[in-house]
Image 1 (tube, rainbow, N blue to C red):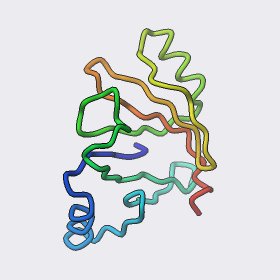
Image 2: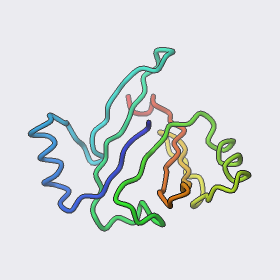
Image 3: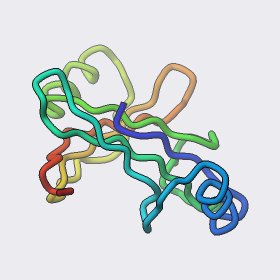
Image 4: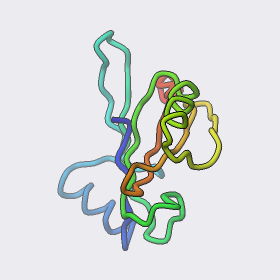
Length: 121
């Protein structure tokens, strides 16, 4: 799991609530949870609330979006496209990884992330 993103009616109050009651330390992107994979590599999972009016989850109308860590984004997107899965937008590349998006069979937008975890250290 790369992350869980969800919409909030009052972003600042919600982040403050999670900080006070669950001890989450947040930044502009939410809270990052660090862990090690089976080979001992540092990896992260992101918890991120978004403003209620965000368009980042579009075309899905759901209140949340899942993010999955993948190893070869281009190959996976080709495979999914060949299987008839709806691809949303173009791949975007940043210093911390590549991103692509698909819709599941219920219209939930899913973010696929080929991470570069070292960029966060």
